[in-house]
Picture 1 (cartoon, one colour):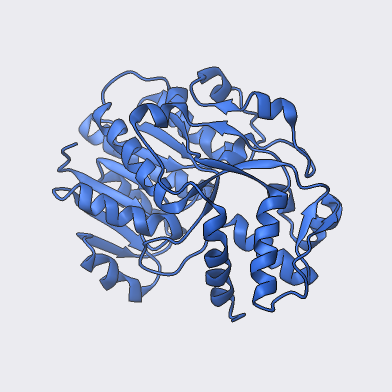
Picture 2: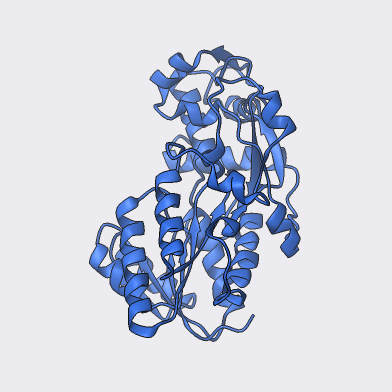
Length: 338
């Protein structure tokens, strides 16, 4: 795909965003890439890696966000799934761009498969397993409950797309693991959460029998998935595609919470961080006193990435267990525990 316009990229210093940023720079050498970073020390690093303009600021500085979005042909949000003010500023900038040029900017946003998570408390939902959430069904995407995780932001984006001033695409990743090729050592969300819960209770814990199941993907395979979706989004600009047809699941494998927690427990015990590798079963109520988001590592979220596979995406990291030990090592170092 040839691209010579302006890309406003968010998340260049992040876990997913860093590795993806490098891929975007390499894939679109003629693009003018603008990004925003919080730390002054990161400005020169990101600029040296190929950014044409690096804005120093935070996502709370919505005037900066809106201005950069208003000057972009393509917006890539690899930074935050749930910041309503950030997304509102990006959409306001995109609308200004449309009103000024008459052209809809393309917006690729990161959501997450937690949006289809059920209310199970640690146990496998066999009906969900038999019929996982398939993004090939527009009705399935449309009918996700408004109160679901991430959904409030997703609905803002669907609404903006329907209004016609932005061409919005949503990427929905599951549990993400593995080492990123980004600029700084960063961590995912769920694995550090489980690790911190184990440290806090001095033993790895799982809700009830731990058979509840999620999909997963390696962070580098996820970055590759974004390239497929970005290319599809840009090549499809100007066409009439339903907002709900532009929602893409990402997944390459599955894990039960019991298996994932067990692998984390083994890695922690091996390093002397907790005294046993045995996993303790607790209730969701008990887990919620350890971490307020415990429900997100206790429910089921099962998806089928039909549209992404149709684009030709083929993940190469297919053994998630092989990466967990290194993930634990990296998280412990970031916590100052080793």
